[in-house]
Image (tube, rainbow, N blue to C red; front, side):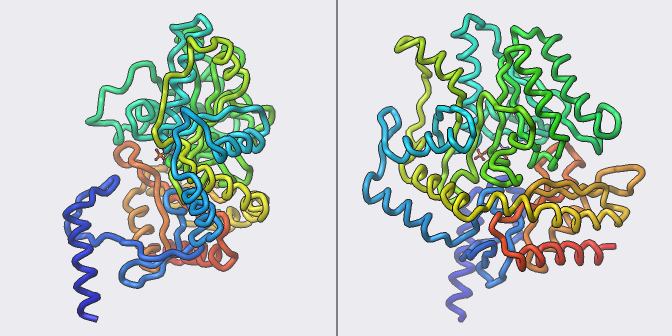
Length: 451
Ligand code: PMP
């Protein structure tokens, strides 16, 4: 017993001394949560505490832990062909690129990388090269939205619009600009549903004033996730898509979080009528978190223009591990499970009743708004309903209270000072009824206690 305690403390010490954690706040006193084992939506830490993972790792563990068939797919691929770069080709990448085109319900050719950030970098480079090769070398600007997160590498960070994440890493890459997001609760365009369409129309204004022949692409998450779970009316994206078409601006949907069933459709853009993005970026759920993989699916009308140029003007980009054979095999297995187990439909069916239950929390004076789609929910905490002043302290307390009761939930990213006030809930898509019950009951109890 003593020995186990000593080896645990030794591990904690090594963690503190040598492991540089993401977004670490260097709290010397805080003990790291070291995951020891996982099963379904649950994991156990080194102290034997069992916790329900209400954020699917980092919105990626969509099928939960312990899917042996996924591990088996990786194993079989590794003992067969361990690695090959995609300057050549291999079977899992070929099969996966074809499968992605099918599930995207269009005609797409995919460039593989290792992460969501990289998938977005690739998208931006392709968009710029596409216009340059079409005789528009000045058409290079990328429009994104405030609150958006598109990744941590310098290009993706330049499209990211959360001041705290960018300070000290500037200047941002040139050619990136931002517009307000659709956010009816705190809209720059007045109240109500119409504010979403006004936010879309504002993009047209910006394109016009910047000069349409200077704008390459609009990049957006169909539902801003880490920036505070914003759920616009479906017509918002339809309108943005129309505007993009009108000005020959490419529409890039970042489906890193919203892809592969998270929102109750296979992809977030599928909630909006008539939308078929020019480029779709993916990561996270593409492998259900079992392996790193990024993917940039490019509509064939763009890819064809690259092909026409022949060998002279190819896409000069390579990623050593992008589209690793084991990653592609894991992604294929993940999509097979999503389809065979009808996961996406089940999420869609369960979503409304979960949202309705969570909305009961709006009875609390400090719960400003509860939003959600599929298994992606945000609870915006405020000082009071009238002032709508963000309430970060309460968010921290709810998260701590939930953890004490065995539930891990998250909150929106490090946006601007004072605005980390949206609780985020995104459990694995295969969570059982019992898991979901525990999640809701725990959250309700913690909020009740805090009042
Ligand atoms: N886009 C979105 C919408 C994301 O949420 C993230 C990661 N949280 C990324 C891109 C970047 O993905 P990665 O961390 O794999 O680089």
